[in-house]
Length: 291
Length: 335
Image (cartoon, rainbow over all chains, first blue to last red; front, side, top):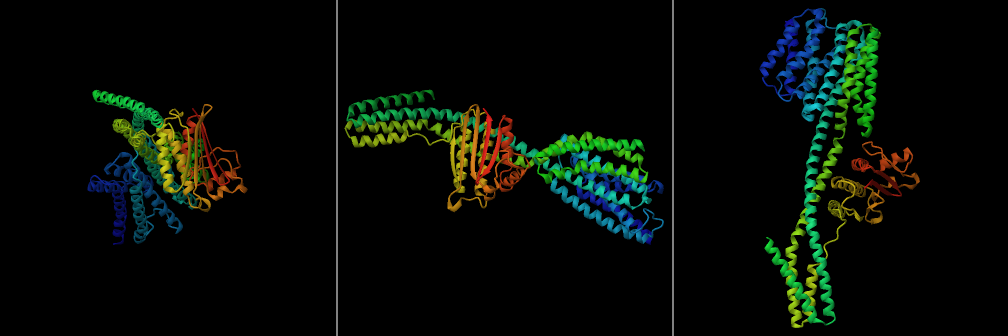
């Protein structure tokens, strides 16, 4: 019974990881994903115990990154980024588990010397961390909406992939040389948490990059609008310059009329005004003719 | 073993170089964000250092160390591409400030263009009105009615009265100054403008407006900031002077600033560092004075960085000083 519980709890962990994968991005065919995901794990667990560490690494890369990327919907860059984050989350969980194992003095991955009940109990905090981490990642991805395209997007994804590859290589070693002592594990915990922080920071940086690009595009559009308005203003100002000249001329004429009236030369003033009105009428007629 | 050490050392050296490059690229970024971005190369260096430590201390993982070192070198090659994107990302706030400013300018220019167009369309209306007044004047003169003639003359003079005063010849800057004058009036701030901006002020209108708008926005912000209001009920006043001189164009904006910056005892004078962290060039004051000025003038941030970028593109210079409670921004560029 205890052995069965241990077997089920082992698979439950796999189910939790699949569930977390489904949380991060919408899946194209959830059922097919679920089957393929568990099938890959089933195949990898049949290998010899001596190769367990290596196949665990393969499982991390293929199953937790590659398979979801194939089934997720959305831009490739976003899918790959999510796959890398999921892999990092599982790797951090594994590392923390190893750390706990080490702290309580349990030999690593020695299922043969640990009771099934104990192994089942150990998987509870492991699953809890996955759920919490998965929800955290879901929140992050909803908030930052990683979706940059082009070379800039590739640069962020390439950084995340290289970063993960650089920490997974020593991660594999720790599996393999688990008996070497606690110090490498302690240091590695710091290294992988640092890497996880860098991966999360890259998400935010990508989001800021998106915002900068959006604002830049908006500025370009606004600059075009501004140029158009300036052109319109310039044309209108040219026309209003003619109006200003007309006003200026007419004010001078009116000053002449005012002087004539002041001097009592009303006849002269009238003749002057008559000339003005004639000129205005002629202009008006010319305007109408040109329309 | 030696190969692993050599490769790891080479990878660490290469990553150190890229780290230094990123550090200098992010010179304009605030220190906290600059440090945060250092996470990227630091995490790569940490991974390489860990791998080499495993080899040295525990004598295992030589192949893994070689693998990590090679990845580290690949990172050193690819990091500059990432860093360019990081730099763009760090400019997001500045881009947003620029877009917001442009939005304001577009709104002001639209209003101005509408007004100018309306003014130009008034030509016919003006002629008709004037003709009507002159016909009345002519009739009054024919009747020998001087009083009526005076009235008709006054009416005609009103029709051809000079248009409202403009701030300057440059249409874009004129529109902008009109909009900013309205903003100042709304905020209870006096704006004194002495602008002689020709049509060719050495810059594209978009850039010219960005310089004027940012300078005035900063001044207005400082005037309306808590504790920066006019002393003893006196309204704060902004003075703007802009004119071409000896092949250069000079823009000077003065505004009252926070009391901390105004303390003459501290001798606050010279350049300062904006919230972005960009260094400003000024009167060559000591670093302490710069920090004081920056702390006292928190609002002079993005705007100044935008002005400085534009002015520098035009072979010019920007300097800011805070002395006796007056902040002075001086921008000078080649015509």
